[in-house]
Amino acid sequence: MATQFQNAFSDNALKQLIILVLLAGATASSGESGDDRLVSLVTAVFSAPFILFAMLGGWLADRNSKQRMMVYVKTAEMGIMAFAGIALCLKSLPLMLGAIFLMGCHSAIFAPSKYGILPEILPHEKLSWGNGILELLTFLGVILGTVAAGIFSDAFKEREWIAGPILVVIAFGGWMLSRQVTPVPAADPTCPVRINPVTDLWRQLWIMKQDRDLWRACWGNTGFYFISALVMMNVVVFGKNDLHLTGTENSMLNVWLALGIGFGSVVAGYASRGRIEYRLVPIGALGLALSTVPMGMEGVTADTFRICMATLGFSAGLFIVPVVSVIQHRPSPESKGAVQGSVSSLSFLGIMAAAGVQWLSRETFHISSGQVFWVCGASAIICGAYAAISRGRFIKVE
Image (cartoon, rainbow, N blue to C red):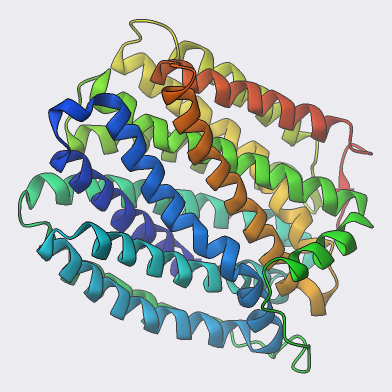
């Protein structure tokens, strides 16, 4: 869990720092549309490796010890962060995008192992609790990494490359932590090669469709990542152009989101108590939708916006914990890595779709950045309605 926290922190610190560097260098004439394009571009570049390599990550997670795979990817992260420091020093757009792409590759390989190992080292009755804590630490890492990027941007103005060595040191800490993860044997050392992102994803989707609960959880997870990505992208632009915040103040908005997600994830984990409480999903979706209503209103104040971010985070925690628990619990032991790879691919297809929706909403339909939050709310209602028609009130963990 500590290794995952570090991974989420470093991913988002680098991504957000590069976004802020690019926004600071954008010309005034580019306006909000230019900001939207930059944010969407960075998000798309970071997401692409998950679509291309998540199935490879799933295969590696099944064929090898998941703990060993975590150590390998943490080793690679140190080199990637050093490269990112060089890219920031040279202020080269291609190199900065290259660093984002490499970090995306690293995380795509890491994702199936980090999620797949949890049911291997926790008893089934504690899986929902464990996911609550994991999601808490993951989103805390996401938010605190975003906050750190704002601090780096302001503290190292015109010298952002200094963040590179700092992130290398943090990556080294993650490598040390990964070596302490409980060693587990390979789930399926003889599994055939699965590296084609299209054919293998299609095959895994067909297999998952045979399990109704797993199928619904898979698409609920995709919808969640679509909504969260759209919120995170839009907050950056809204904070700069509507609330007129500095880089640090903009990033600090996410602290409220982190507090809400942390509390919501823990509540969801404890509310489950030995089972997967699927009734929390539509409740969380409704909370997500209601939270976005004030965010899109004309003249919303920064204080109101912060409160909405907190309730949005709390609702997100209620939504995602049971969904992730279903995805981890339902597959057979030898296919958990493959399923996690498929879920990662679909999650980041959702994120790529969010980047496209962000661009279309602003460029084609000329929706204000505040009203984009209403698009997020409408999407949450759809996801909640889909989950609400799932069979049963909860899924027993046996």
